Length: 229
Image 1 (cartoon, rainbow, N blue to C red):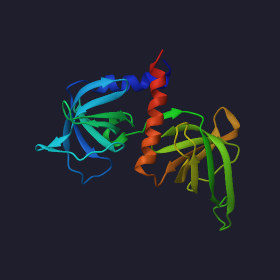
Image 2: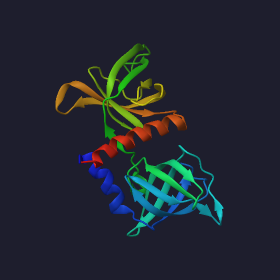
Image 3: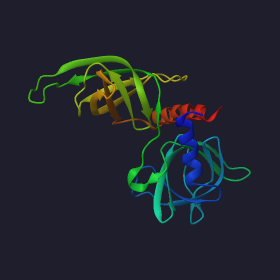
Image 4: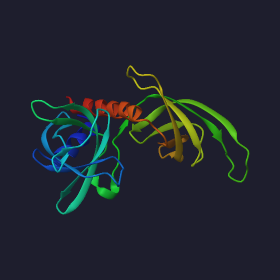
């Protein structure tokens, strides 16, 4: 089992267990009503939950939706995010959740990030000198260094200035078309072990629910491979 798989498994088992109660909200919506659910099972990195309810009213849910989950452990509030992978009403109303972020304290949620080599195209008008209004058209074809539901990092020989607005095109190894996403460059710095390549972190600015779901499922499958001997 590799480190990614081990961390993924431990994340589930060290924080939550069957019959734990979770508070459920729509992702990043402070005004969302709070619903309550119970963990019925944990299997292969997925959570089987009782359908979240509030006062006997079921939460309106659909496949590919991402939700935020909250619980208290040792007096500390924790949270994680997860993708609705399946919904069913019989024999009991339940939902199946794929985790999309690590379990952590409320202020420190982090999306799962996996090492992977995926073809990436980056395009944008870059202002290399912040003191000048001149821009350079940039078009790069490279591969990813790692990937998560919120962003991606790449390795490339050219530095991309922080704050640059770019468009990336991801080619996931599934049956879907390439994903085109407007993004912002968060950092671009030399690799510590290499003074030739830059590692550049890129955050998604606008992404559809279906596109994020594809990325979450790819990250999940990559993690799951590490669980298998």
